[in-house]
Length: 363
Image (cartoon, rainbow, N blue to C red; front, side, top):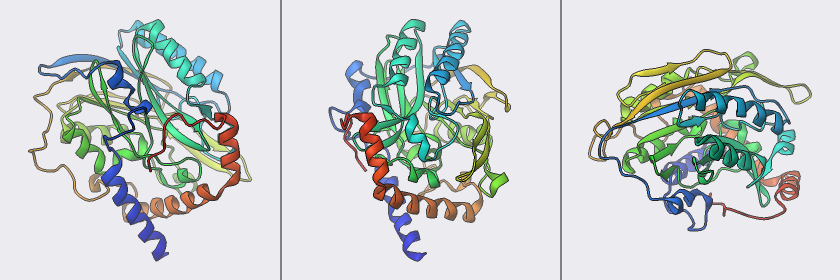
């Protein structure tokens, strides 16, 4: 037990130091935004209409999920949205288990092709996540595409939420994408609860943060609850001084026995402006939330301001107190060890990726 906790402490310190490392390989997809266009440095305030898509995901049905997502994108575009954000692992399904690997995609599979085509057709920025197979590994990957139908960049999740470590590899790398509308920070679910993220957003002078979630409430089966999005988004908006778009799924997160998963996604997504004003606070129903936010450099905190947090985790946002933190830590260690030793994982990833590595692992 003590060895496991020590391993987690070491892991988390490494994460805090390297989660948002800006020195990605020059040929990595995470730097694609820089190749497309240099980031526009905001010197005056500007408005941006954002849509968050709070949707359920069908299990083992990528086509069905993308079809549903298309309807939401078209509705958001009709209402004047310029950027549309979907949940983490939107096209993959409602739960993570070993059969979820069957719903993984190659690095430029159906979801990426759909995002490029839909962005170009509707002239929108689109952000969404999928389970990526690259080489012999799986990754929880977020993609941002441009109104021209190009990939602006991709981010792989660097911090697993407890048992997620059984199913995909953590990957260090840049979490701020340089785009034509500014520097966009990406925090994938659990990453938002680590001090490294807000610290780097301030250091890199990010203009906006997107927070895709697939965070189920597992309290019915003895797990942790999922707090409302306004709690997380408001903390970041007030501490960092930039707009926050946080979206979570709705519907059941369920897998029948023998490996039963029994939870539900509460939704409760939110958009909070840079001055801390809550622009959208959604309920537990499927739908979209739209709001105009202001990207205002005058609101942004700078590296000269006092630190917004210290240590590894953000104490203000810890879920379940000390016991909850310890439960997540222990699950991270056991899951990582199991993933590394699992031969089925390697075989399935290679079968989907063709053994090709599109983006070198950095972990």
